Image 1 (spheres, helix red, strand yellow):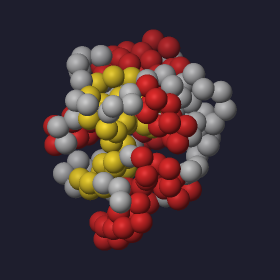
Image 2 (cartoon, rainbow, N blue to C red):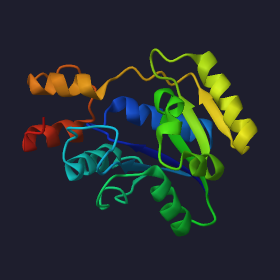
Image 3 (cartoon, helix red, strand yellow):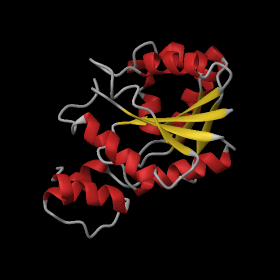
Image 4 (cartoon, rainbow, N blue to C red):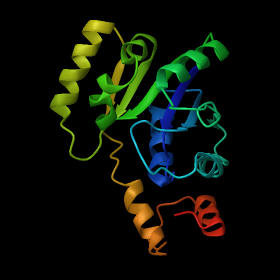
Length: 196
């Protein structure tokens, strides 16, 4: 099977995450995509409770049969490291091919990730453009990694990612849900539990 791994804080998960996953699923003929909400992020502070974020992702993907969710990082104590997550998943799914789905901003910062060379040796990458990132820089970085690690890196430009989770949190803090960038189940969960 070809499995996409979509990690992130998802604070909160929004419609652009879902739209992007659907584009990737179809464009790369993946069998499924596993969403992996981070536990304790070593890149971000003041992140919403990890189990609340897990529940929001679960609600957001409930109606998509080819989307799944993993609590592998949610259950983990201490920092969430992608290298540890991938090692565990490769043991669970030894016969499968993995595609790590990530934004261009994170891809360009990959050397700051723990054991990033392990990821480049053991994963295929699907990288979507984030606003403000340079396609030229992405292509140069991709070529460097392909030459050094012989990894597969695909850049997708047709999935522009303009919705910001931080902006959504600001709107929610102001009790403004008019922007309609949240799946309905997620919006209901946030209102019911007074998240943000």
